[in-house]
Length: 209
Image (cartoon, rainbow, N blue to C red; front, top):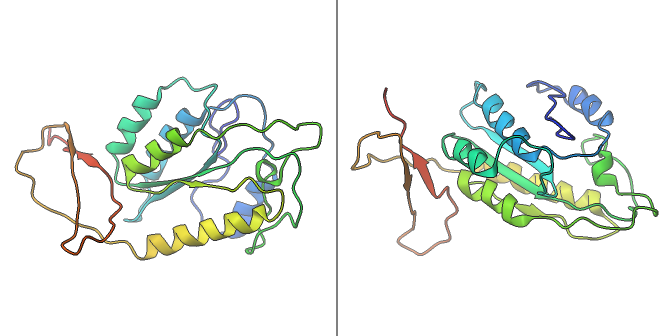
């Protein structure tokens, strides 16, 4: 799904890497960024998935300029869902060196490949927005280093880290003291040994009605 101006689904659910590569080859960034609308649509779409473990990868600078929805509405939809969001913060570079494909043979979209020398102003990445997406879902936000060389290798490492995390996660459940009241409840998870735990900060107790 791209979100230049408005969210557009470029490829439906598939395990065919060639179909994904074809969709990536035709990405052309334009003016306007409907980030909030895209995340909201993505959450609604992924809810339809038949898989128990569901996640969304968002590649963006975190700046929204064209959405009809508000970030508070998006965060509410994230908190009401049972999926993880992994945002990757990027900013346009004046130029980039190296191959335009990653380790899987997929083309690197033009938004990762860098800008021309005439476009020498970098956009700042709003990591506050990306952290909000991640922390409200239990995911993790990343920031690509502002380097002119090896950017493709950086995103490969991030994708590998996300894949490893999805393979090694645990699911915890408990019976809350309050009934399902349709409200948001904060939770905190900690271990007896003091190990670092990353999990969502709360959940919406969905009303049975």
